[in-house]
Image (cartoon, rainbow over all chains, first blue to last red; front, top):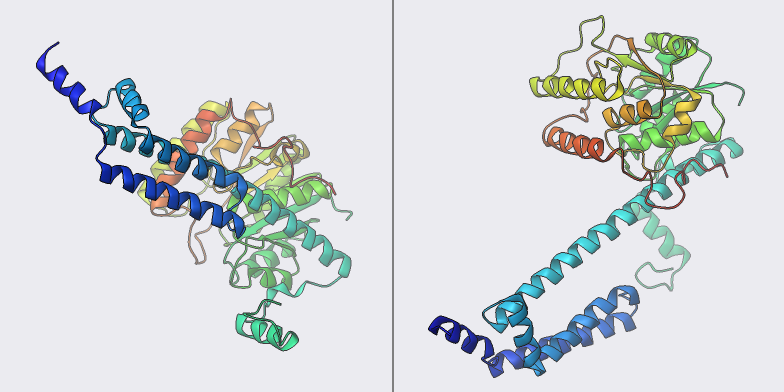
Length: 160
Length: 245
C-alpha cells in the first residue's frame, strides 16, 4: 500500500469534528421542528412534508453514527465525510428542484384548463342571461375592501 | 345557433384595433359567427369586441395566443360548427381575404393556410424573422410534404376533421404553427396554402420580437423532435376543455 493511499484512508476514517457534529444535529432538529410546526398550522401539506422529515432524520442519523458516512464516502470515492455530505446535499436539492418543476408543469396545465373552461362557461352563462357579466368593469380594489368592511364591520383584516 | 362557420379572433391588448377588425368582417356580409377570445386583456379588449357585435369569450387571466385559439376551437367543437376560420385581432389580416379561405375549404382542404408570400409583396419585417420564417418554411415543407411558404401565418381555415384533431389538451400554448401543421399532415389531413394579402400591424406589439425569437426556435425544434413520441395530454382524458357538458 503506497503512502498516498494510506494517507487518503486516514483522512477518510477521521471522525467529524465535534463542532460539526453538534451543528449538524442542531440544524436537523430545527428543520424537523419547523416542518412539524408548519404541518400543524396547515401551512405545509403532508405530501410535501415527508421529504423534509426524512432528510432531517437522515442528517441526525449520519451525525450520530459516523460509520455510515465513512462507508458511503468509501463507496462513492470521496476523500472526506464533509464532501460526501455536500455531494449528497446537492444531488438532493437538484432532485427536489426537478420534482418541483414537474409539479409546477402539472399545476400550470390544470390552471390553464380551468381558466379555459371558466371562460367557456361564462360565455354560456352570458348567452343564457342575455346580458354580459359585469366583469368588464371590476370595482377598484379599495372600494371592494370598503364595501366588504361595511357589510361585515366585525371582521378582522378584511376576512369576512 | 344555425350557422355552420365560426370565425375565431384571439385578442390580447387590442382594445383599439379589435373593433375595426370585427366591423370589417361584418362588412364582408359573410354568413358566419364571430367569436373574439379575449386572452385576459387589462385594456377592455373584450368590451370593445362586444360593442362591435362579436361574441366574446374572456380568459380570466392571460394564457397565451395558442391557448386563446384552443379555447376558440373548443367553443366551436362544443357548438358543433362545421368550419372554423381564424384571424388576428391586430389588423394584419384582411377580412376581404376570408372568402378565399372558405373556397379552399369547400374545395376539400382540411387546412387553408393564408400565405403572405405567395403572390403579393409581403409586409416589411426584420432580417432575423425573415431567416427564421424561411428555415421553418423549409422544415414545414419537408415534414408535411406540401409546399409551405408561411408557416407562422395565423390566418387559416379549418375543416371539421381538423377541428376534431386540434381540440386535444396538448395544443401548444404560445406559438402554434409549424408543429401543428406537421401534426395535422401526419394525421393524413390535407393542407393547402392560399395567397392572401397582409398588412403591417396597426400598432401594438408583435408576439415575435426580441428574446422571444430564441425561445420560439428552441421550443419549435423540441416540439418537432418529440412529435412522433409525445403524449397529447399529461392526463388520461385528452380533451378536458372541449368536453361537451
